[in-house]
Image (cartoon, rainbow, N blue to C red; front, top):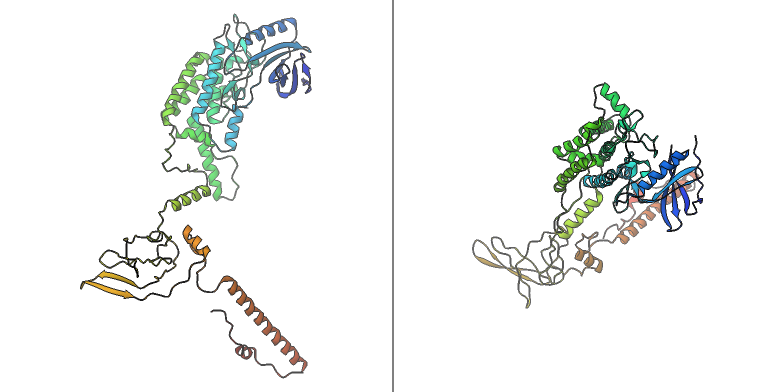
Length: 527
């Protein structure tokens, strides 16, 4: 039977304006509404009940829910009957459910850290333990990733309390009395013919939620597990088996790269699941033991309370804390983690490394005028300082006039341009040879022209020069090439005209083309 939805804009009980439908099920619909008194969003959940006894029982359940106040549970606001249906109003928790969080992590190839996952589960355990501590105890009966809402600040909430059941003298109440839970998260006793739910039923659902949060795989339903047991299998693959299966699928997908067939999509192991392989074996084994015990088909083999389940998770979280790497100090070298799945280089990282290597290289400048110098330069073109290395002795530098050598030459290490600088004055140097100290005098080379402003700027930045200071400029070379091509074109036109006239009989036979080309003057292609 199709349940008709309430149109948006409808005001219920004179207070709640329906905005849109959030979801639906066999019980009815869940609506996003606005409380006109407080102008705050709220969730309105409807139930299809008939008879006076059903209405009375729902009112009793609503009074139980109204006493529930916990930091990880939505607040109860109101409950009323209208149009032959019963409605429960709860505070609306904005955010994404756990299923959506994991889906986005897989879509963006990211991993939610395991301490964060366990922290969310511990917060939900606190809320469930609070429900079980009520008198009478309140059993949620539908704990699953879809009902765990994560807000923008990272707080986890257990929502959808409309499925809860208040246990009183062992009687079954009507809140979702026909609701059998979600396959994979509902224990055997919650299905028809079962022994009835109790706090251990929520423990089973918490174990299934932990299983999904770690593996991104839905746990098998009770019927599927029973069939697997009949065939001699556990029906609930361990974390190690899930990792082995995903690794085998990933290797099979990679083998298609060398075949003609196209590889299937989604064969790569999600990064969120791959982090399980980085855990110490004892922690992975302990997580698997917690899940297997919490999801035991027999209630007597499970954790008998949520407190026991929560204590085990907290111990695992304490073991994970030391394994988390602390951020490096600001002065330490930092780099990005290498993704083994990527086949392309990390260009931003390469650029960052090259820039860091270049900026960290010490610069060299003239000891007199502080002009930046290249490794191949033996002197400064600005002031005329020259560094001479004497064989078998220390290097000494000297200049003409009143300036004498002041500093020892330093070794230049920057690979740069090969602009040779000549001293502007005669250079006198002393060298220690085999026969003693000898004095040599060099004639100064012709003074080189002063570098252009662009060249000085390039030299100050340490960049290599694109064009030498001597020789033809690029504009001149292009102009001469264009002139040569124009002359060559005119020659071919002239030969064509002569050949045409000769064929008409008005001219003598033309000179051979090669002889005519020899009579042309050479083109000035170089200076």
